[in-house]
Structures are given as C-alpha cells and as structure tokens.
Image (cartoon, rainbow, N blue to C red; front, side, top):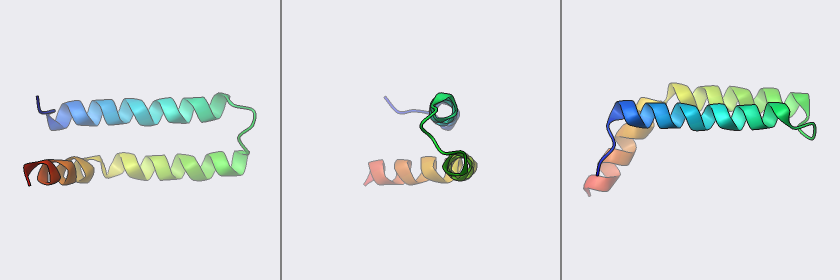
Length: 61
C-alpha cells in the first residue's frame, strides 16, 4: 500500500515534532546543540515534498 503525499507529510511532521519534544524534555541536551538540531529538523520539514518525491521515484525503479 502506497502512502499519499499528505499522509507522508503528516507522519514526517509528527516524527520531527516528537524528536524535537524529546530533545526539549531532556536535560542532557545542550541548549546550543538543541538549537542546531531544531534548525536541521525545520529544514527537513521544509524539504518534505522533495523527500517524498525521491522516495517515490526510488520505489518505482
């Protein structure tokens, strides 16, 4: 069963939010590293349609 772009986007966003929440709740994460990771996760979220397209083209081969 293939996932639609909307389903992929929702699950991807939920996963990134869960990672961010886990890091925010952990006292072991340095604030500077948290900020850097939050920026990386935000960029990953922005490129979600590109990642979906790449995964679709890879599965068609």
